[in-house]
Amino acid sequence: MNSLNRYADPVYCIMRLMVGVMFACHGESKIFGMFGGKVTTDSMMMAYGWFELVLGILIAIGLLTRVAAFLASGMMAIAYFKAHASGHFLPIVNKGELAVVYCFLFLFVAFYGPGRWAIDAMMGRGRGSTVAPNA
Image (cartoon, rainbow, N blue to C red):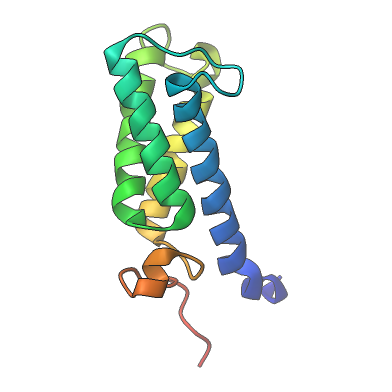
């Protein structure tokens, strides 16, 4: 399996891109009613939608990646406990699996960093990768 190590960072960057885009789509569905969603009239949900849209785009392109991912992780933890955990604590029972998955994916992104294919890496802000180069 060591032969797959050379693909770890590109695959991570593609994962970061896809998760960020999907998160942004959740915001777009709340704000603009896109993708089968309904435009929300609740001001708190509208704020969550804008956060999802902006943070998702930042994560997808790799700009301010660690900060955006940390904020998105916290937002998903709050969403889980506010919207799902009141019915039952287990995510499989209360339909909160997606919030939990997003929470831990974003927490991982916050700790791993932007990866090589990111604006942060191009600008020198973030570490390109946490994988040590072969000596």
